Image 1 (cartoon, one colour):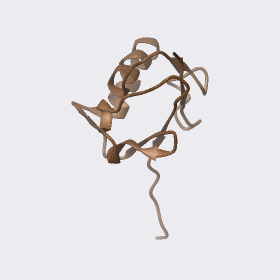
Image 2: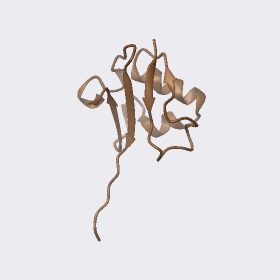
Image 3: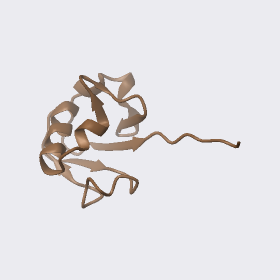
Image 4: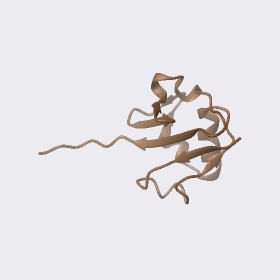
Length: 91
């Protein structure tokens, strides 16, 4: 089983490849797996047992907040995209 993970170039200091793979069964396990390989990334994605407020995670283009959050189950061939929210405006 392989899960493809997409992390934008905004987080290059944590991931040396833009599309690491994992054999995780659910998102919490995926984040722990990523953190084992790239220390500190999990703390930027989750706070306790929830996603951080300004981080968006998609499973096959579906926002995991509308699924089971970090307990969302993964299947072989799934794609997980982790996007820090970007805010701004005109001053």
